[in-house]
Length: 285
Length: 302
View (cartoon, each protein chain N blue to C red):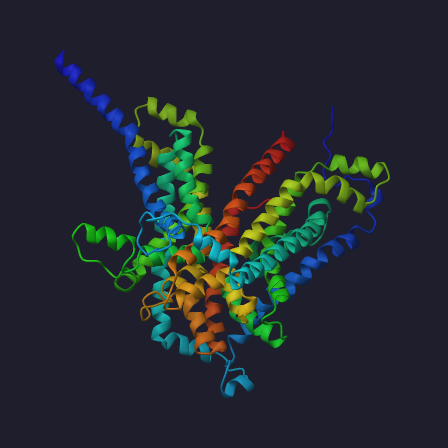
């Protein structure tokens, strides 16, 4: 009787351990992932920030104020915006146009085109940066925000076209056909039927492109030289990478402001993405 | 009975001129891709066989030198070191680190309370969403002589360690795991979500232990996601530049000099563009092989 009880209790204990152990381990992993970020947050609110994690002696927004009011910083955020917004807009328009025939028409070269696109998606952009630089030098395109945007657009096109085509595939053809019967032109159906129905997809592609360019360090680092053309990514590196004297608090606030758009877009993008997926699912059913 | 309409049977009205319209719609992307993506990629194959330099005598007069760059490359001890570093970095940070870590987190999260999953998931994803330069800065601070890790160590009565100098490779690997794990975690979460509950439950009734269920049932069922994720993560890590460059600059010495960083140093610091391109060609070839593998695995339906 008592041995039976003991066995039961042992089984119960094992059950409790099996239930709680994942919570404990995951909490520990979560802590390890959180600590480096926590430092960034605390340092940005601390006037006398050091490199060690500590609660600010007195919470202050001074770091943020001085980061935002600094004209050099404004310039680098502006440059980052020019690159990211320019790229996102171009990518959406160019990939959107390309995806229409790829989704709707029977084309002889469609298969090979899609394969080339998929293949290019996998290539590491780092591997082409040296020849791209030579190419830019040869045609005198270096140190230009405009041509950097064009290169960023091209490098984002493969996966954007791929995504955009998938989104367009999930727009039912019947709606378009109905509009054609009513006498609408291709352009009108595109504008009035497809684009509104594809908005989640368009936003997703645009957000991906924006985030990719906003966080990109290597491309502007190699293709741009003038200090007044460098985006925030390169500026952060120059602050902590080379200069001996660093105001850690200001740099932390700069980093946080620079990170906010990426986080915000991720959150917005997730909403649109799930909408896009459910849209595709509804169409299938 | 209703007949489903395949894409082919659409009104003839728009059939004429379809090819022309398609060409028109595709032309901007063709132009951009050709000019800014494929031309530089093809140029890689040419420049790699030249002695092109940024400064000096060969800057003005670039010549075709055949396989000289590659002959030099295979005698270059620094090149061998960077290949070795790339392999170590790739295997420990991507193949093992991010995948195993992502897998463990995803498995343990399976079946936990929703609020707990959200909290842990958000923390892990935050490190992934943050731009690479910020990640580098955060880890520069975390591992610094006076950083958080050393403050903890000192408070335990031990001597602080100059992590980025004493264990540079370990440092960049850990930073990269921190930055990249979320991607694998999300892939595995989605894959585990697709495993039908009934299969696991019936195995449980048959008396299979948690470990047996994992090895015999769950893992085989998500094997597709595991391999796809492996190739994707490998490709991403292969081209990884920013995190290492901003954190250690490839140093101290050659300690964290991976291929992308060696390529950068040869091309832009030593001004040997031709040799730098030869190194990028090696990267490109590895990328092409991985990319082809990836396409095979996806078995895409067009």
